[in-house]
Length: 394
Ligand code: PHB
Image 1 (cartoon, rainbow, N blue to C red):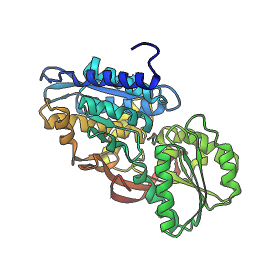
Image 2 (image 1 turned 90 degrees about the horizontal axis):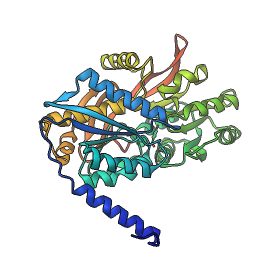
Image 3 (image 1 turned 180 degrees about the vertical axis):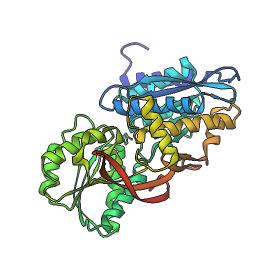
């Protein structure tokens, strides 16, 4: 190919060359070889907390449960995709398949990164465990995708129903303008209106370099009973700061949302202003169960006091899918057999009971209603109600 090849054609040819390389790799597992898991995460940039939480949880899973399954050692290969460049994530995945000969691809901090990589999993016939990205449509993009985190429709519907039942009649919605935000907006609007509520205005904030101040001023001027927010993890602190500084709370406006906005990774830094925020979500570090107590204690001890967040359990449970599918295929399953072994799997996670819907290859789990409360001066999302067995569509 010379430099004068039109750019579109060049891209197609490069794509084909990549595809041929991927399908030509012999993938014969030998019992003595380690099983390689290619973990692609944002370890730097605005979404670095997602990478830090998930990589810590994957390591913790192996330390807690043992790193050898069916005679094969599980080896993590961690690469940083910086979180904002889908082509980078895809290229790293291709390199992991071709050079590292990984058996699993895993991670995926944001929706566009998971969507860009889906064709690599399909072509290479490798299970792709989506641990963080949460737009509902993701698993439809490859039969090799299985999700261990959550979906936005799943965690949005319960707070909409709660609001309508709790004297909140007029809501202003603010979501980040991409897949998960649009899922959250659509689900909240439908559920809240169906329950008799009114959406007074809805705004979408940019994913890159957002400035929440003008949007929150608009929300204040609209005088709603509550502001519903979805922002991806990492952004909650900026939203909370502006909510406080612009005096929305003093104006009598409640803050409600999915739990991303009071992410446990940032909640302590938010401090007292976060108290009273109501969210629905699948995980709180304050969840009361023996599994979660052991998880939070172990994670904090292994990671210099870091409070584990919802992305971390996406990583931890994703490692469970990997280890358990290997066990069920005696350590030598093909990609197809490993995915088949994950379908319908059920277990008790630190978040509570969960399962993989065999058709959707997606999470079925309990979604909790929580209120941020100060416990010994520190904010925690305290669960006060729950909806069991919520599927990926909410
Ligand atoms: C996503 O990009 O799918 C995503 C990222 C962070 C979240 C939720 C969804 O907290």
